[in-house]
Image: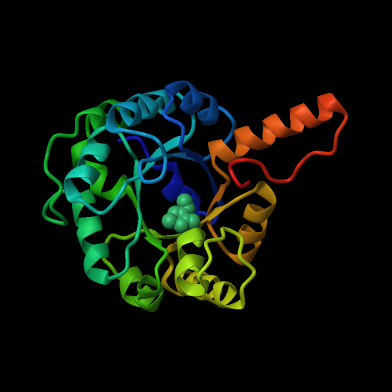
Length: 263
Ligand code: 3PY
Ligand code: MG
């Protein structure tokens, strides 16, 4: 089976730079996949992406060096299994607040006897290889999103879930629940200590610490802080920024820092 390069990177303590796609386009996916990202995530939670688009985006990513990952909309096992069958090599599951939820998520990603994933690997075979069924339990990456007050309180038990590779912080939701305002780069002391707590727990338990960021500079700071898996903004932010920059330069104006998308 094709080795999951994200697991190798973690084993060798090399940070993973992960692209993030909210626009339903196989062409965008193909472009992103060729830019040098270690992984590219297709976002079915907040992205404008349905299953048919996700399938064609995973096909496009398969033709690039980037490992195809999916953020599912929720922890529904049927949805998780379907996206694995569509060729996702990693699943990021939002809003994991309890160890029971984490266990249910991981179980959906693992074939028996380790879990409850139903057999029908479909594109998993095409992308992973003919021996995918024998090795998928080892190669598929599982990241639980920590983005609620309860998830933060349960971080130890969530990280102790058998087969869970790590966690991924959703800073907007986490700051919404902790401070009352959604912000991806909040400087609120409650957010800073929550993030530090998650990263140090991951270090202690040898699990992947991931986080969504809004820029390359922010992602570099998170890597310096000890994160292994960072997302330096999504396609929507990057498209908006690149457009504003080109327009401002063409008009001889200063480049605006925020636009209609808020970034
Ligand atoms: C969050 O910041 O809450 C996320 O889910 C990132 O996409
Ligand atoms: Mg979120």
